Image (cartoon, rainbow, N blue to C red):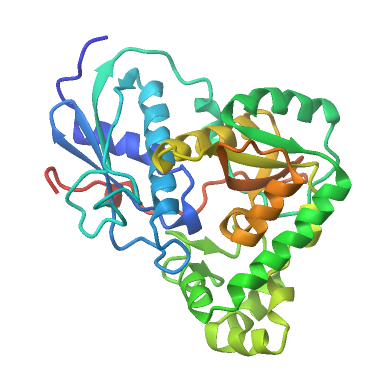
Length: 347
């Protein structure tokens, strides 16, 4: 393979347009791209797109950056390029590291070369989406095939119905833990868009379409989920019912426990996370993340107790998976325009 002398602005725009389809925590989209020198691609983190309450260490943002990098690698492969090994910044938790304060230092950068094969998961990128509805009947053979595809990615599959019901209840309990802190909900509310009138409805965050809310839920949610009202709902013990996903979880054909080595850089984990999701999409099935089971220390420990996660691995996320109901719209989740994700050289 030969090195690329330079990428033009139109080429970079097309690459970013595809890479932006990668998932990010709360759909905050922290990834920013630059060409600091000919033939070199750099990934930066937007310091204004973090979750200080839910993600104080920056772990989830770094996982999101890893997913974005994998998305860019796939996009490059589709256009006859190969991304060289990324040079990574220090991971959160290492001496002097943490959430980025300025855009300056790249989180990762690499050289770009001509040649290589199209990534086998490239065709699944445009169809990937989170399914937040109720799953329909899923053929066992489809799960068998999926399990073989994702096992190398550190994924453990749970199919036992009683265990799925246990974890569905545990997820609701874990959600309740976070509702105790009003700061957590205010931060979550910042990324919710429950009306098309919201200025960022089609740009970022989680809108009512993405959350699969009914018409009544959208109208009620604008009032009941607003922080001031939600706090009263919490004090009255009614808030948990608003965020319960038990019925949707118990409809899943299986739960996937996505794990990673304890010492693995979350950036590397994010790359595998995206590939796992694309593998599910490519198999014809759908999934929805249940991040709360990994984020809650108590729930995380309980999931580990109820499953066979090896001692040297950490639980990163849990997915409910199955066959989506007919008519599931696999469209692009709200995204910022690609042009806004490109920063000036040397930024």
